[in-house]
Length: 355
Image 1: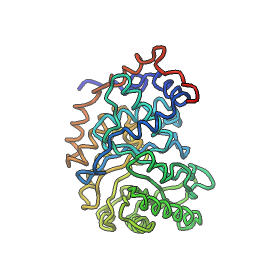
Image 2 (image 1 turned 60 degrees about the vertical axis):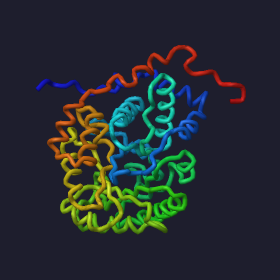
Image 3 (image 1 turned 120 degrees about the vertical axis):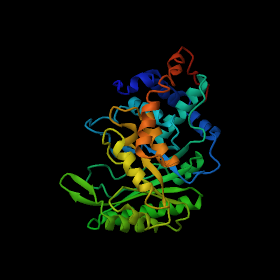
Image 4 (image 1 turned 135 degrees about the vertical axis):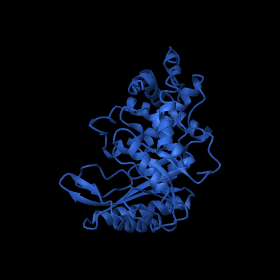
């Protein structure tokens, strides 16, 4: 089989496109609200009851490593290229902090102004709320709400909110985070906003926090997360995979999404875990994963996303999903090439007086 060239973000998203994002921030910041209001939303969050959502909120917590590269997510143009590559696949949507969501809304406008169709219509956009627990900090478990608010999520017409709680029974900061997440869940429910609660049991080690992936820990933390807030009517849970996952699936009637964790290179292991989890019980409804899709080793993020979509939405076996990956690798690589041509003088209008 012919060796495929690795995905090159710089060949997919022109540098001028990111330069124009900055220009829009300076001269046309209202584009963000305009595109949010004009975006065509889904009638239902999950029409078939299943979701594949890309997680792109890591940098706001100081996490920029992916694989062996300690700065992989530190280059915004390269990160946006990978996010866009996933979003033009059949995945349902993206979860991120305000900065990235607003950049995507600006790019959506620039794409349409350049003759493209846009890429956010009918996608699920989820706003991340808590990023205060900075990675590696002394206060890492005190994960307060420092990102989007329920009111801003509603104003932008986003489709959901996300919070995260890591439970360390020996750390008092866990209680403060539980309280903050409970308040966020209650506020989102009041506004009719579905909320995705990422929950895991952790233990402190010399190398940092380690996720405890035993059935006992997972069943406990799922029950804790299910009970957060004044109502669980709009709650989805995001949890790691563990052995005997069927016991986790039996612990709640809230829909469960699998998280991906650190990238493991090629997407095979992720696809296998998700496929096994989807068989664990009817409460398991998909995946909300980040680096496993945006940094799938040398693979094309678009192709990796298509493969995961097939596992979740079509029940495809892993081998069939991998065949799908090989089939679609490299498609639409010129999708945003027109943004380079749109860099001619006058592409970014001068600000109007008082505008």
